[in-house]
Image (cartoon, rainbow, N blue to C red; front, side, top):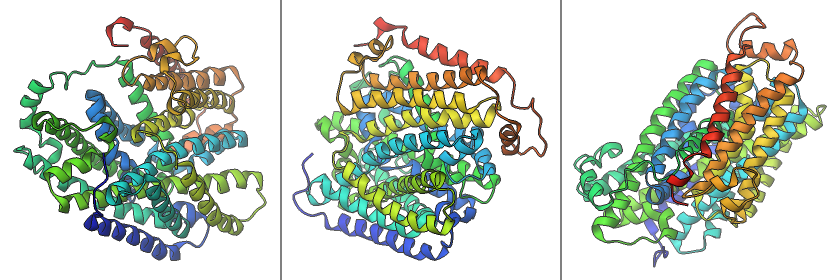
Length: 552
């Protein structure tokens, strides 16, 4: 897509307002930061509504505006699996992790893994995994901010990446977790308003009778869509294991993404953690169905109006659609909402990266350093990390959602598995977790280097046994269906073959579940680990089936 021929003044003004308000909130919130706990977890004082809205802004990044809609156009039914799995993942987060992580009272994912398994080595490994995941996630979202600036001003995307990155770095460094939390709450409200209303107007213009409620507003457009694009609602355009991989990456990736988990350490208690997740699930589901309506409307618009949008412009489709069918006023709102979405996610990622480097890495290497010095170092770490991420993002991925999905896969195999097993199976030990984390995350990360970064054909990468099955549309996603099961299998098998963790470490499991007493048999049976191994083997075997049924 070509940039606008002139500066989009109204959109620029609203975007600047969002940026200035974000900085003001952080300056205002800075007065609440008195110690390290305030800076990293907001003094564990955040309520359910505030935390739930902040979680929504993490979940609904710029991928919501300009990444998922691109997949809906190109991937058709696969996109439904993405947003359905993503929404379901928060239910998994609620049932498997949220209240239990809050009772553990850690600062970060990396601290939880280290303390649950009694290993500083695992802390260092998890910091490395966290940095890889966060940088991938950041690169996609900073590119999104660049896209917005490109559309507004016609300047290279690099300008938007630098400006957006510097603004976020500034307010994260200044406000800490208080500033990040209140900013994310504000940005969620902006995002909801600026997505729902423009999409409603687009649907009204296309003639949808249910336009006032965008998630279901396109219903009467379906008959024509089935005539013009007969395969649009056909689920089996790819091997079913793609859907399994999407589910595994989303379900365990959400639990493993450290900036999501960090939100649970900011709330007052486990009850607040639970209810903030409920609010998040509801709003994320509402927005994701609205996003699907947007992608549906884009395909409908191209088919019925004979409009050709090139593949390279699919990331811009929300802006194209709103400008063509709703007008510049609504477009300005969409632009402001996208800026807010980008800022909120980048802020959470910078926060966890700074915390990981100072609290988890430096703090473990220099345990004698007091909290006051760590707090001072944290300000500098946030600033340095922000600048380094901006530099890395100057060569962003071609499609935003692709980078995000790789990040989810790596997070699921490297961080999600040890968190879930650490909560639900006492026998899980540091040796099993170390094996699962390292091998699982390396499978996903090296595959990203070869496929996502070097551009190799998935079926040609040197992956024993399975590479030939990474064929077809979105074939690279199947890597997650290998990395996550292998992480689970190694975690369970190696834990079984090595000494059990001590009573003090196992006691943490009972405490996370709210038990006041310790029972060595509780959460220590064989049913869960055996089930995990069997399901993991079945998933990997299933990939090798149905080879001749789908396009290569």
